[in-house]
Image (cartoon, rainbow, N blue to C red; front, side):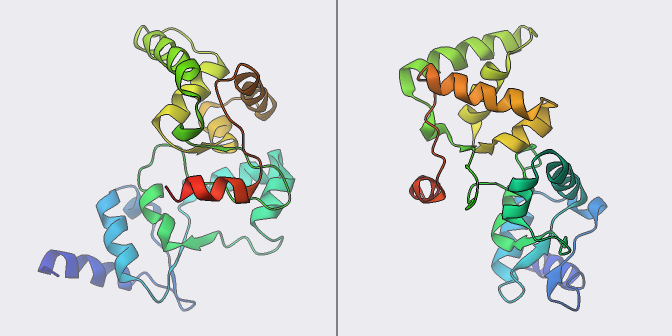
Length: 199
């Protein structure tokens, strides 16, 4: 490990609290990049947990109000520490609004989508049309916007709605429409999503 990396590790080691959880101040988190996340993920094998940054905590507070059943599947009432595995740190450092992936729900339907769940021919037409409209600074429908987001990477419906300030009911209606139009496959069970997530 070079000196620069060691200095980074030393700095972040001081941010591990008495419970072994890495707490990164918001102003530091916002300056970090994905490479920091990979380095820290490898280094902090004992604590293996970090507290979500404030912007993601804000999202989960919104989720608690908007879809309590989903929030209950992820967290427990009274324990709102919002700590997750270090595995997710590089994802959160992308800072693209996709956030902590909600893809392993056990008591309610999952709404997590990856590019592999777009049906090739049908989705290609929609995504290309959405790209053209976006480049021409024309508005996109929730369906077009969702197809475009999925095209660029995994996203759950809750982060999608929050990121684009779309009503959750409208976001779920976009999913239903894309499925009906045979543009998207919707896997609602965690065990059906798991093999795709591992690819």
